[in-house]
Image 1 (spheres, rainbow, N blue to C red):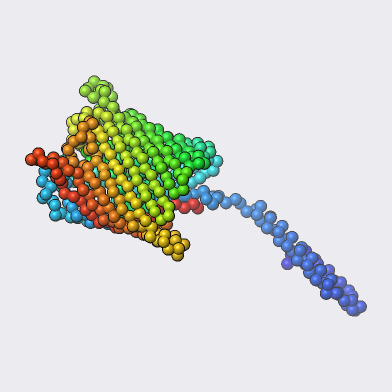
Image 2 (cartoon, rainbow, N blue to C red):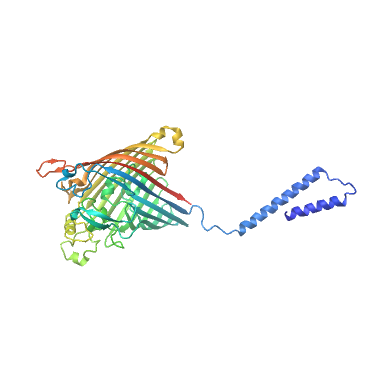
Length: 478
């Protein structure tokens, strides 16, 4: 019992004991008043003890909301009703017209960790595992007679997709330095698995520009209260040694070495407007030289050769948008790229020695990708399902892209298989916001070209496929 309680009870007993013989009685009112005083003294004592305990208890090491943890990924399966033979785009594609194959895959598994240090300082990291493992694989080389070859796509065993430090001065001015995503095009800026309808990432942008494009860069960014968001980035240029016909400048990002070459530099920028409910409009671009970003020859050797004036300037412009309201989702993008000195870079790459990092292929001066998708959430018609925050989209998508659209400004039929139309229909079911189940049927229609007999028409087989997947994306504060 507490000190005050004991003292008062002792006094009561003493009074009763001293006057017992005189039959002194204590009224009920006096007794109740005394009990209330005891209770007040107990409450006061309890509060004092709590205050002492609070002062003695050390501060928690980590405050709630400082950690961010999350990620995204896909588990997929597909069956392709066309060949995966490396000669399917060769001289006799009809030989492979009846081939088909299937795949199970983990295209992307990403773990994100971030921490807010306070006073505007924060750090973010993303570790990506592509295809369920490291970035090394055995591949069949199309340009080397179908040889089996061990391929290292990037230096290191694990892809560190992001690692940046950031200082936010206010909402209008934020500086970020480190490995970060280059948000050129709709796919790079919104590449999480729940941000597109398809089982796999949209083919057009995914084919001609790096995805997910990440480089060591310095970024200035911010946003306004009326819905404008902006980013400007300074980063190393791409490496033209690794450009090719199928993927245009995409292989030139990152580095096959343990460091990123920075003999040339580039800039990238993005502006988003979200001032209208449910609507996002975005413009983005990139510009930088690429030719001298190499270890194959020194600058002195290049200056003394026929390539002394070659710069290989890569210019990319992109527009993308998204609208989501009333159960309707519409997304679209258009990306156009130009490479200066494409013929000289082609000749230089083809002349490189065997075993070099170059694919030794033609590369286009111009490439493009355009796509649009639309879906409707039929669960939005049910108030009960809306309350459960479930959704069921039926969608359609159309893409057109060509990684060999023009060669030094001239339209060409060379490698006409690099250009195609693609149509897809499917469903997305989200039992909860962070988890999605997807299924789609797509049909790739390859571009027409000039046949060996001089007539125009379809040269290569079309590419239909069915695919299913389970995807997730979520970020949480602890």
